[in-house]
Length: 463
Image 1 (cartoon, rainbow, N blue to C red):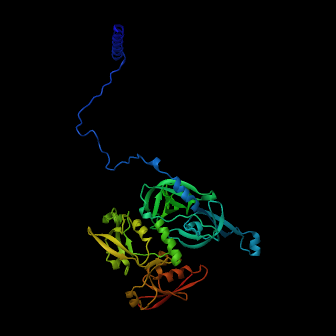
Image 2: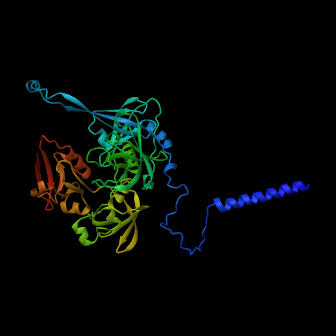
Image 3: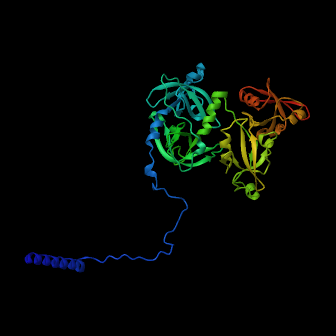
């Protein structure tokens, strides 16, 4: 027993000696310094709450959106016939040159199971024949249903034996800057291709008061007419244009918002043409010396410089100098914000406008009307429908008043006169004038009958 106790005592002393040697000779000093926190050790650099998911880039899954989209995007082939080079035989035998087919291509989006397809107007323009190839390589002849050159949207249709996969229109007004999107096209008949990017901007104007969604998803010429979808696979736009000096993608691409495309399609199917509702205003131009001198160049909103007679704006009580800040639930920072929203509306629709008048906010209801003015083809005259006062002054119940004359015709005294007839066609309104001027032959002569404010009739022979 004493022997066991002795061995235990020796073991304890040996362990103590070993531990002491390790602490003294081998272990390095490791200090933790604790100081008092004065409350300024944490600095907030942003008031934006951060996500527990971090950057979120790796959390985005494009696969479902791609799977739901690729089979609804098609290849569109436009075949046009043009005259080829004239040979010496054509000169003697008078054939006028041979006919040469030219082929243009683009993409399209199936929007119904029975074969309606949305594409760009510039993809199908002047087509003698249209062909559509699906993602499964089946090819069909397509019929042109209608177009709207202003929005660059066209509607075509194919007759397939089976029901087709299609995409439904989403609400593009809810698309946000920075949101992930996919550009899906079927370029050069390679079957559908998918590229990814974000929404870079909204309400972009490319020169004709259009309102485009800008994205950095790669879009090349063959992708025109293809789909822009969000990560849920919802159709938020129709890819339309790129900005590039080379003709290839360099970082900017543009899409017609789905709300505009949807409205154009509905109008074509229901009315046969596009119904456009107008306010009858003209905004003050920005980035001009006059705008800078008047202090309106950097205004947040649309500064109204001109209001047409008997227009929707005039009837709503809007005045020159008012600033449009909001329409319905859409904030208006610049003119394309306004025109983009109006492009989704029709005559007779009532909208709620928030107006800044002398720094006082007013809410005014406005009911859109049909267009009162337009520029006619060929001559480029700007004409307007007659007001009741015009009818009394000019002593006519029909006709259109000339309110704008191109420089080449300003020596003819046309401004202020009323056109009542083109050849033998009576002109009742601006739509009649547009159709009549559009039918003018370049190889014949046209007689334009007008009446002045003094009641005298004039005739202009246009060749």
